[in-house]
Image (cartoon, rainbow over all chains, first blue to last red; front, side, top):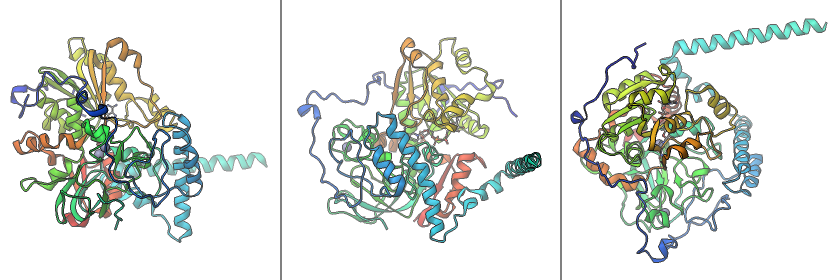
Length: 169
Length: 365
Ligand SMILES: NC(=O)c1ccc[n+]([C@@H]2O[C@H](COP(=O)([O-])OP(=O)(O)OC[C@H]3O[C@@H](n4cnc5c(N)ncnc54)[C@H](O)[C@@H]3O)[C@@H](O)[C@H]2O)c1
Ligand SMILES: [Zn+2]
Ligand SMILES: [Zn+2]
């Protein structure tokens, strides 16, 4: 494997296209906040855009005092995961419980997704969905290694299981 | 076909749509409230198919690039140029703006890895692709180029500064490229994927190092900088960082922190006293273990944000036109929409020299 540490790699800035064209000594860490002194009420209020009509259930952060003007309508909360999400939205974004419940709901939602597929007679094509074709094309050795490890692990597990059975007898 | 939900909506027929490092955080389950059945994709351009009665600047047939942030253009934050922090576009969270195809934590919008997308506030952020611009360049201007540029900009780089960029993904590569535009004196890029380091070495150009060859990052950067530390460190890695068994166990496997923050840890500890750490790598909302005590003791300024794409577009158009930035050079894979699972796998597992994969729904037209 090539080593980068031992290689001499210094770049001369003078040879770089566009060097320094955006250099600005005034670029200080508070940029890009504008001076708001001249704005009415320091711009804390604004003319709101017209409001989107909610036609699906939209969960709202309790840190908002009102529904924002527009929002996404994909996948409204449903099922067990949906109920957990509704409870999660009782807590603020600053509360761990909010996020932990949502993460738990995501995992449950995955199971709901697979079950839903099966109920509709669709068998999820996991190898294709996980991009196994690309793996086969560009990382054959990796794939073969993974398969070998999996086979060895299963063999070991089978062996241990059968040993345990024998003990019991 | 998506529905119009608001008078200022448009429906866009997608012609190009990228897979991004941010999608990998979704793909690996690090972003809460990612519901089964939502479409991903926040970097796309396309043809305007339908406009609502409130849309004035766009018309049917226009080829537009669509910045990844949805923004109203009127609220407190949009008025500040913070288009990535709009207050009128995300009911589910106040800490995040609205992003296409980026979970309900970013507003629950359908994404652009699709044939058609609903685009709210269509005449605020979406921008006509000029005749002279290749749509392959345009799609890179929806996120990657502005994000790299803003990463460098937030670094407050002064002429001659040493800038260290963690991550040689598309974003890190672009950040390193842009660091020169701000007058950097030295640009160093850190990663462990060799083909990416080699690409960065040529493209940015930059000095590049494999972190697996480095025993202690802070010591190494200090050695490179007369023992003072780097003026500016950029975190272009985010929550999926490799390089620390401990962080990977706690953050990525057990999910006790919001992914692994080792790149940020390195950035803080490698920066000089009074230096600036610019974060564009994305982290989850639950919190991470980082050496905040050192931030205080060293007087480090941390600057971070979702990129305000619209704010930066005019300047970036000039840079593309002047040849200062060549966005499409980052595209390594072009594929049809149906190949999306392979695209994700290739990008995620870093196979076949993959830097940026782009999907071409509707045959790219
Ligand atoms: N702030 C924004 O608006 C914004 C926009 C786009 C992307 N992002 C974020 O930027 C980050 C990078 O995006 P990308 O598309 O380049 O992703 P990517 O996954 O292609 O690149 C990340 C790179 O970091 C490398 N890496 C992993 N651990 C590292 C470590 N400890 N030190 C140095 N390098 C390490 C990986 O090998 C990889 O090459 C992601 O977190 C993404 O979510 C933020
Ligand atoms: Zn992106
Ligand atoms: Zn706004």
